[in-house]
Length: 382
Image (cartoon, rainbow, N blue to C red; front, side, top):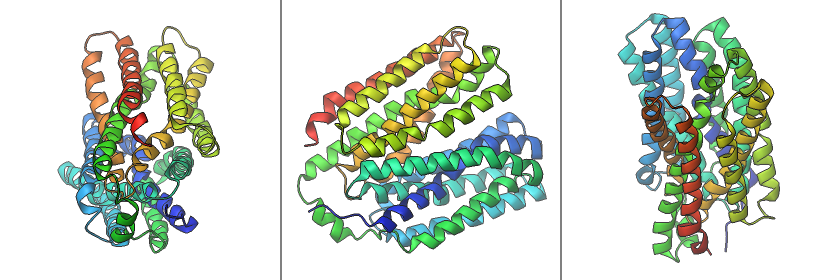
């Protein structure tokens, strides 16, 4: 018998995931603040960013080992405490003008034991629910709202209060998360084992294939989106105009998860995956030649709506064959790892002097993720 979801458990898991992923949404502003407030170089600022993201990815990769060994509420309390301490230390670091290497270490440890653990734990908790596809849609919607508010308010706060304009909201959100930890599913392994006792070989192979699909998909979509700013600049769009376009597209992308939550029980997962990823491929290939601000904005909107529409289906794809959460906890690693690998490949492609290769690379890997899904995953999840 499938487990019946408790609304408060779902809400608490969503909030815990938001506590963990907050810095990912705010990272562009954090990097900018490091440069403007501390006078660090762009290279140094990106090293700080890389340290945090690397820590989060490593935390998720190691989640297979810690998710099974400790009560989930204990893990949540520990990780939130690290988030609070790490962000306090970062604020002191900035105001005290301590060493750059110490700052890198603090952000890596905060990502590894704090933000990364919360993000992974929240995803794992959603993954073990009865209806993970719909609950992932709610999660993505909540994260989009948080990301939009971050883009709206954090830059203003940082202009007034320096780096604390980023770290204080992170600490505040962490305290909100503390209140909801008591309602989090506690990882009762005997309850989980009762729902996953059959098909053990299937439950070993299929989640790994699902994670591979997510890595390949993110190799295409993540780096392409992160390169939209230089693309717009190269086409003569002003930086503030590009910022408005991306803010509008991010805010409107909430249409994606809301639509997914409404359609998940009514459409076949395969049709949703094929449709949304086909839209993404067409949008990626349409970013060529001279594009007006309206054309740029509309393309960004469609790209992000499709991104946030298909995300819950792909995350639910892993969770549907992994009620234990042992593999779902590695979804953030698949996402962040795919983006990181994609960035490395795109960096080498840019050395050829042909930026169109980014479009072809991204479109190819999105198409490859669809191909692997239909060849290796679709017909084996019944």
